[in-house]
Image (cartoon, rainbow, N blue to C red; front, top):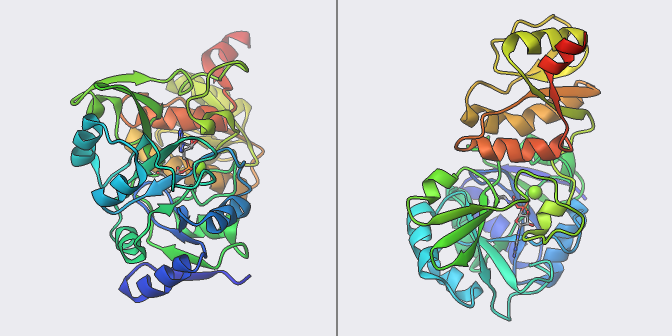
Length: 341
Ligand code: TXA
Ligand code: MG
């Protein structure tokens, strides 16, 4: 299959909408990461998305909507709190989980009786959903297990020859996927996946519980509130490690691992041989750069990549959550390593 890349804009709206109406799939930009979109109500189209990604059948997709009437069409019941959060955070990087209506295909929702819904904050993609008249089921547009794509080039690296169309909307603003929440009771939400809508932001409106699966490896017998928590994620070919410690210890450590890749705050003094990739000193920069830099480290042929321990405030919690999975929960202390020597 030939994969066409088109710039996001009115010129390609009709073509993209037509493709999706006929059961085709297309990669589309959002403010978080690129999504691989299909008509959420078309079981065959949804199956093509699972196939193109190599995604496990029981990992449900997010339904992307352009207005509240679409939500009413999906959700069996919309809690008052969800309406408040929608008013304040939609369109934006917040996904909410609802009991679903019977006509929403089980395949779209990984066989669950709930559906995850979000209104993305991207002009083109909102228009496209409106033009289609149905919600777009869209997981991140990467091969299952790989880092999520934040540019059209990343999408192409994984999907070339597998999908007919990639809409290029430039670099994604946030760089990490949306915050996923469910409702524990009328005034408590549970964060299943942290994102740019932070616990601090949600606490303005309700109590917030952070699910145990966000920062810890799930025990084999644990209750899984979101199937995505079970799977290997965001993993480049390189072995990723989280590196704890102050600047000096980290510099010493990298001198001892001088042909590895490194993601740091940009201020560390490193030998030339260390291959540095953009990361940054703020959580927002780290969110923006993380996935792109893990992909770059692979392109550079790094076998090991060390990433400095992020701050976990704000969007930093999302950075840490993704990084823990990329690294298979491996955290190394540069200080301990110094002490051993
Ligand atoms: O920012 C985003 O959310 C991006 C863009 C494209 O919108 N999409 C995205 O989709 O990250 P995906 O499929 O890569 O991740 C969806 C996550 C998975 O962890 C999945 O398990 C969880 O949401 N999820 C979806 N439906 C769910 C449900 N009904 N109950 C619990 N978790 C659900
Ligand atoms: Mg994903």
